[in-house]
Length: 295
Image (tube, rainbow, N blue to C red):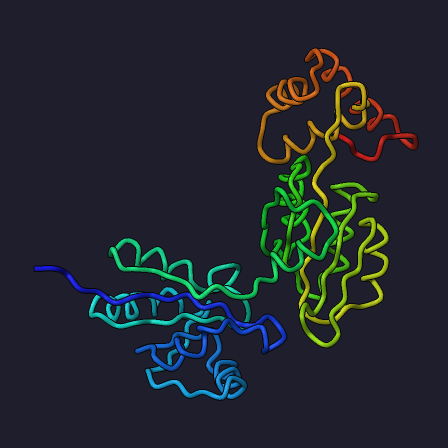
C-alpha cells in the first residue's frame, strides 16, 4: 500500500511592498488545509491586502511555540494535509521560524516545497554595491557585547561578503564593533526599510556608518559588509600578524596552533610570527606606550 502524506509549503511574503507578493501566494493561502503564521494578525492584514480569505485552519507558529507546535503540524502532514507556512516578511526559516518544521517533515519523508518570494538578504546584497559572487549570511549577532565581538572575530578573515540582520536600536553598537574587528575602513552598506516608502541604502566605511547610526536609525535593517581583503606575505605587517593570532586564540585555538596557522596563511616562518607575538606582549606590559592589547 502506497503511503500518502501531505505537503509542507514554505511561502515567501512581501518584505515591504505588497505588490511584491508572489503570484502563487494568494492561491496557496486560499487552498491550504492549515496556515501556520508567525503572527496571525499580520496574516489577516496580508489577506486583506491581497483581497482573499483563508478557508483552512489558521494557527500561530512563532519562536515561542515552535517546538511545541511542530509535532502537531507534522501529524497533520502525515495525515495528508497541505500546510502552508508564512512568516511576517520574507522566506520562512531564514532567521525566522520554519527550520524545525522542515527538518521534522524531511525526517518523516514528507514533501516540502516552496513559493519563492522576496528576501531581504538577497535584496540588500544586490543593492549594496559590494561583491555578490560569493557571500555568507550570518543572521542576527548576539546581543551581549562580548559575545558579539567573539562572533565577529570568528569571521574577521572571511573573504566572502557578509550579510547580517540587526535591530535598529543596536545598529550603532554593532557597526562600532564591526569597525573594531574588521577595520574602520572596511566598506559596508546599511539597507533600511527595503521596498518600503522610506527605503534607504547608506554606503561607506564602517567607522563612518557607525557615527551615522549613533544619531538614531529606525526601521528594519540589513547590513552588508565587504569581505576581508586578499593580502600577500609582503602586506602583512607585525600588527596584522598579531591580530590574526589573537582572533584565532579568542576562537579557542591554543597559541602555538594559532601561530602555526597564521604563518602558513602568510607564507612566513613560524618564528617570524612568534617574534611578532612576543614583541606585542612585551609592548603591552611596557606601560603608557603599550600596543592597545594586541595579544
